[in-house]
Amino acid sequence: MEIANVHGKKICLNQVGNDRQLLTTAGNRPKDAPQRVLRQVETEAQALAISIQASTHKLDYIAARIGKSRGYVSRMQNGERPIPEKLVGPLCAATGSNLLLQFIELQAALNEFETERSQIKRLARLLEAA
Image 1 (cartoon, rainbow, N blue to C red):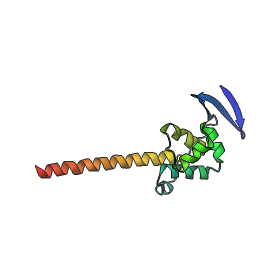
Image 2: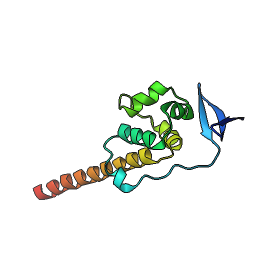
Image 3: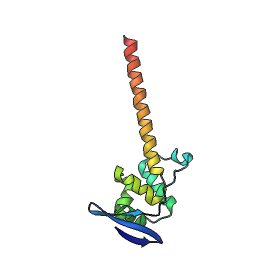
């Protein structure tokens, strides 16, 4: 295990596939965003962009923390590239905010609710027809 000191924080450099991924050893966990902010987010890309801007870290720092290029992170926050599920946790850790994860979980819950609602309507129509 290789340890580096970046901006006064101890960082563990672990080999992950072909990418070097930076993982913090400080134990700082990302914080949940307020519900009033979460309710206003419209897309995953927007959630990421808000998290990055609120973190006050430069894009280069965020990219280094997740082991990806600055351009790739920029394309994700602009909605030009989808955000892979495997990067959600590292992005939240790098920005210090769970806004992206909270948004994804909210969308999943809403989709589940809509699916259940559609099924209820379909079954009600079958019952009416019987």
